[in-house]
Image (cartoon, rainbow, N blue to C red; front, side, top):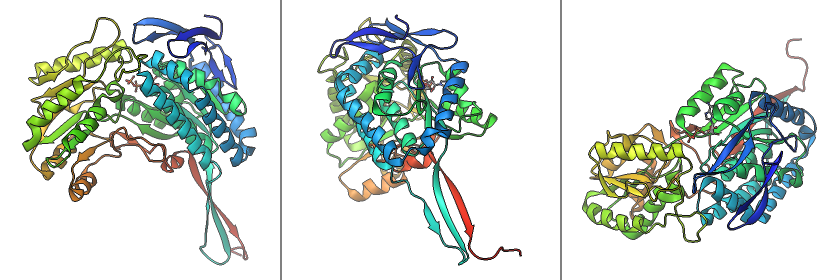
Length: 494
Ligand code: ADP
């Protein structure tokens, strides 16, 4: 590894320069402690390269840079220019789409066709929030004739953003877009499993026009750099996407430090409900995509499938046939739908859930095994004969594994649909509009499956999170309200 970059190659985008440093103040730098960590290719289990690791000291430096930018030039920047820079960044994502997608496939293992969609969605998201930058408006509130009151929407300040590995660049864009639109500055930590895309994207920030210190991107471990962000006394807000376990730790760290604002986008165990009057082939396509998209590594994966009794047997048979056609293999192959799981840890976790399911008496309809002997590949797995108390039905597996069972009627569907502690996503398949609306209104879930769009709010009920990302709703996470009152008449108390 040269000091701050390395030459790498991908099958679809050829040779490129991979930055490896921490991106602070618009420059790539080494970590203070000189530590690095290895990045593993999940397809081959081999080391791709090493990147510099941020420790608490680097978090301090990045936060100081973000603070200086926030209190200085960034505060005076016009909303129009904030929008311009986000638009420039969106354009650069599009210009570099093939490279960014290839880096995602290399680092995360996602199929190249899906990675390309991710990158155009990143561009869409950044551009969308570029559009919001000059539309964040306050209000005038009339109370008495002798006061003039107005409400401003002000940025929160320095935002710590901690993102996961399942959509490395999409999460990067979801976090950066609204925070910048509202005038904040950022210290973003990528996931330790997938730091490469975040660093290539960081190399576009300066070119997009952002002043130094506005967006800082660091690589590092959750327990070190992530924890340092969550407990930092000069970080005004932390936005986290990841597991519910870590979400709780982030809240505790915020509570135990400076009560920074917290938004959390956490896990799920989401129901996909198919009524007997649904178009069965159409429903199967959605159900298949709902669970197996991104190798099941989606917080909004539809991992609990409920089918009305009368069509259950036909559905299971057809669903098995459909899922068996999902092409699992080399992420760089054109037709691949499902690549490897992201890491050995995730692979082991998923395989242990599969083992538990088998031991608990669930029936493996298809899959249930590792695929091949190299890379973290797992066969798409469908369990039937499950009961609601089984771990595979209650806990988030975060892999290509689902359970399928029957329900009787609408009330039963709503009961099972709401029967976990999570509340992220849900879907209802029926041709009856009344059933669709009645059941979806009754389900305690914040969103639908993998129909993500930057214009639509995304986030969870119950233990699936706090706050909403995307859409206009995300702006609430990144602004605070200031009420100003001007006395027009004589002083009130003489
Ligand atoms: P997963 O279990 O799927 O790897 P995590 O919730 O552990 O997901 O990780 C999501 C993100 O949270 C990653 O960037 C990770 O480094 C970070 N993280 C993990 N533990 C902590 C922690 N204690 N404090 C702050 N961030 C953390």
